[in-house]
Length: 101
Image 1: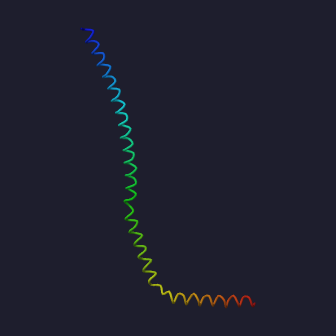
Image 2: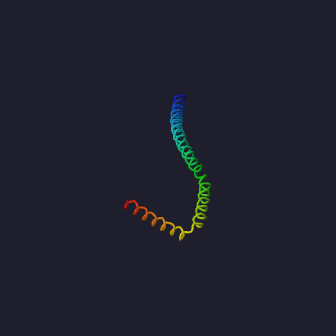
Image 3: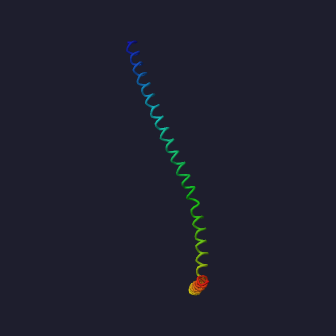
């Protein structure tokens, strides 16, 4: 009977050691998974931090565009075109004078 108890204890001990090894492997895998998740969270946090500045940048761009629009609205295009045509004529006259000399 003592041998039977000894055998039962040895089998239980062996099973317990196998279970402990299995749990250790599972814990290592879980730790690895948690590490990967944490790295992913860190990467996404950095990306979100960069995106946080986007509204400010867009607002600045909107202000610049509004200023450009105001400037363009103040330009008198027909008068500007007339000035360009006048300058082109003057250049032609000056070029003609230089070619004659």
